[in-house]
Length: 210
Image (cartoon, rainbow, N blue to C red; front, side, top):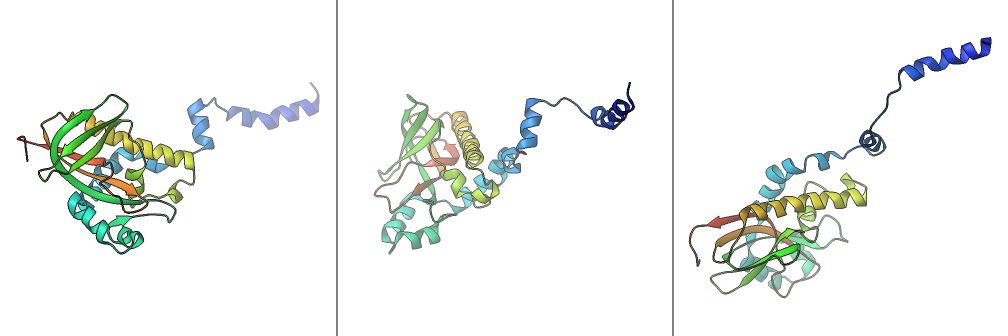
C-alpha cells in the first residue's frame, strides 16, 4: 500500500470512528430543532392559558354591551381584548352559562348551543376540529416571534385546539345540562351578535334550567 494511502486512512479513521447512524426523527430535529413551546403545550394549557382565559373572561351580556357602547373598535380592543399584532383580529374573553339546547356533531366541526335564562344563546365549538386560532392568539405569553415559522406556529395553534376538543369530549354535553363556558372569540369589528365561542374551560352544574 502506498505511503499516501496510509496517510489518507490515518486521517479519516478518527472521523469514521466517531460516526453513527441517526434516525429520520433525529435528522429532522438536527435540521429543525424542536420549539420548546411545542414540547410544553400540555403544561401551558393547564397552568397558564386556561387560567388566563378564566381570569379575563367577562359575562357575555356585559361584554357585548361594552363592545356596542364603545366609541371605536380599536379602543375597546385595547381595553377589553388582546391583539398581539395590528394585522390580527382582536380576541375577547367571555363567560357564558346556560342549558344545552342542542348538540350538533354531524360534522367534525361539532358545536353545541347554550340557552341562558334571559333567552340569549351562545354557540360553542366542540370539535374534534376546532376552527380558528383565537385560543393561540389570545394567549399573551406567546407570539409569532417565538416561532418565526408560519407552519410551526400553525401546528402550535392546532395543538392548543386539540386540548380544547379533548376537554369538550370528556365533558360529553347533552341537552338539558347546565354548563358554564369560559372561552374566547375573535373579531375584526364590533359583532352584531355573540360570535361562536372557542372554549378553554367548561363545567357542568347540577340541575336543569338556570
